Length: 84
Image (cartoon, rainbow, N blue to C red; front, side, top):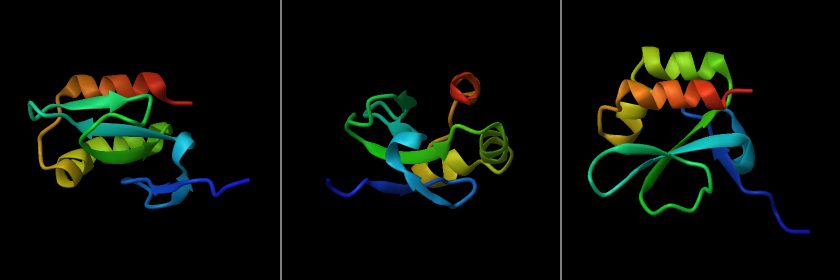
């Protein structure tokens, strides 16, 4: 059995299993998309599927700080729909 990849949530700063987090990726046209497969090309940022982490990321503009592009409000709506 191999190692399970670990990634850090941009909001709570905790290391978690890669599959337990939602990946937001900066695509070539300078927009941010959710990456459900975890394999899209581009710079990625990971966030917990928890409403507290999502609201903290929105409040403190953490996606913009991580990826360098202002995300649309629809990204946060999509993240809220993915929450557990």
